[in-house]
Structure formats: C-alpha cells, structure tokens
Length: 129
Image 1 (cartoon, rainbow, N blue to C red):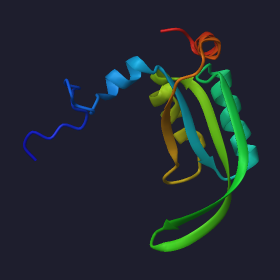
Image 2: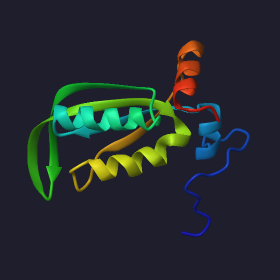
Image 3: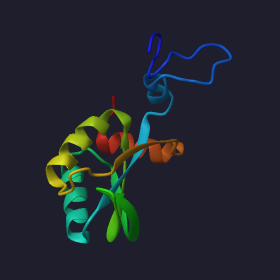
Image 4: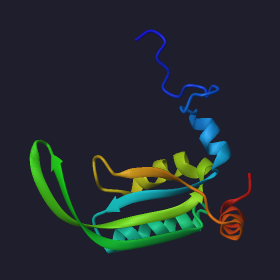
C-alpha cells in the first residue's frame, strides 16, 4: 500500500508514535515468555542472568488454551517474566530462541516504567547505555 508506515513518526495531534520514540521515553521492558517446564524456565533465566542480559526473572505455573495447526490444545506451562532494558530485547530473543524447544515461542516485549530506584538497579545490573 502506498504511504503505509509501520512505525509512523509522531506529529502534533497524532497519537501514533514511533518504536524508537517509545524506547527513548521508556527504556525499560518486561519480556513475557511461555516455557514448557520449570527446569527449562530456570535454565533460560539463569543463562540470561549470567550473560547480564536481564536484572531479574520471575516465573510461575499456568494453564494454556490455544490453537495449534487447526486444533484446540491445552497444556501446563510456565510464565517467565524478565526485567531488563529495551536495547537488550533483540539479543534476548536470539538467545532464548537457541534454548527454547517450541517452533513458535511466545516472546513478547512489554514497555515498563519502574520507579527511579528500581530502574537504576536494572540499569546497573544490565549495563548502562
């Protein structure tokens, strides 16, 4: 389509903002990942912590209902919530993809606005940029 922009530049009275603009306003992200076992969840979290890509990881069990290849499915999984800076996102996606068994892993970036002290801690643990 002619003139279509995926991340249009923000204009006055225009509520759309660019990806880069959002990252500059909110340099922190939480990354939501679903994982099939607690052992793998801990392994992924430990790997990312040891590589200084994240400051913290939280995880807990859940039940998932979803469609896969035209069929309704149900499984027990773990939510892995990572806390880091936005500039680490692509590195985390690449690293998790090497560790994760799913063909289509759920790896989702959520912009976050932590309080000042917590944000400073995330920056200190994951490298200041």
